[in-house]
Length: 418
Image 1: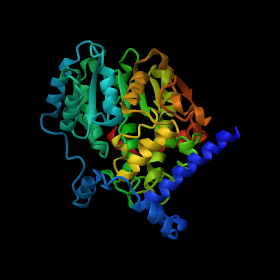
Image 2: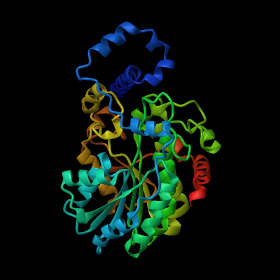
Image 3: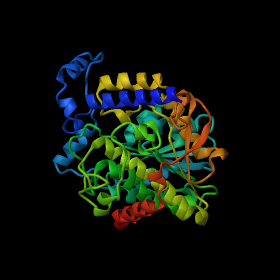
Image 4: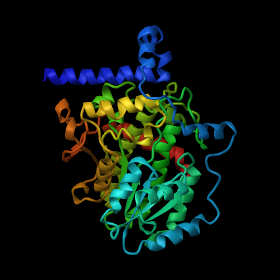
C-alpha cells in the first residue's frame, strides 16, 4: 500500500511539473515558475523535438476577431444531400456520432463498421463534411455505410438545424444510438473564446451543444427498439482518480454560479478563465447530465443513458494545442510508463462496444477498463487491455442537488432553441 501511494505521488508530481512548465496560463498563478528560470530554462532548451504549435483554433479565433459567425446557416441543398445519403440505411440501425472526423470518433466509426456494416449505418455529425469524407476514404470506410453532415456545436442554431433535418430524413424517424463525443481542449488560451451564443467555448461545445442535441433528438431515440445515448466522459472530470484529483487544476463546478449567470461568463463556477479547468468542468457536466437523464427519463422512456472513459488515448488531436515536445514526451511516453496508454484503435473499439454490446445495456453507468494501469493500485486508472467494469462517478458528479441545478441552468441556456 505504501508503494502504491508513492507511485501515485510520483505520477502526480510528474503531471504537475510538466503542466507548470508547459502551460503559460499557470505563469500568473505560480510564483515558483516565475522565479526558477535556471532549471526551467535548461529543461526548455533540452527539448528533443522541434517545437511547432499545432493550433487549428487560430482560424476560429480570427473568425471571432473579424466578427464572422461560426455558423452561417445550413448550406444550400444540405437537407437533400442528407436524405440522399440516408437512402443507404436499409434495415440497419442508425448511429449518430459527433466529432467523427478524427480521433476517438473516427476510430469508433471504423470499428463499428468493421465486420458489422450490414448491421449499422453511421451519421457523422462534424464541423467539415469534406474532411470527414477524406478521413473515411483514408480509413477505408465505404461511402454507402455512413453519412457526413455539418454540426457546429459552437452554435445552438446549427444544432437545431441539424436536428430538424434529421427528423425529416431518418427512415421512420428513428435514431438507434446517439453518441456525444466531440470536444475541444484549450489549455494554452490566456483568454476565453466565446461561441456564437456568447458562451465560453469549452462549455458550449463539450456540454451545452450536446445537451441541446440530446433534448432535440430524444424523441427519435425513443422510437428505436433499444435506444441508447452515450456522452463520452473523462477521468479529468471525475475527482476520484489520479488524473482527476491530483493533477491540477481539479474539476470543480462550485455552485454553478457561472452557468446560472448565462452568456458572457468565463467559467462554470463564475471564476476567472482557466483553459485546462474549463475542459475538466465541462466533462464533469457531461457525466452529471448522463446521471440526470437516467434519473429523469430512463424508466419513463426505456432509453439507456451512459458514459464511458476510453483510457488516455494520448495521440488524439484533442491535444493538438499542446506543444509538440510535450506531446511526444508526455503522450505516449509517460502514459506508457504508468500503464495508462491506449491506442486510438482500442479506444474506438471500446466506445463501439459501449453503444452496441448486450453487456453495456445498463443505464446510468460510467463504463471503464483498467488494464495495464492496475499496477498503480488504482481501480479506475485506465490502461490498455483488461475487462470492462462499472466505474464510480465522483461525489460531485453524483450530487443529485447539483445535478438538478446543472439541468435547470443548462435548460435555461438552450430554451430558445427547443
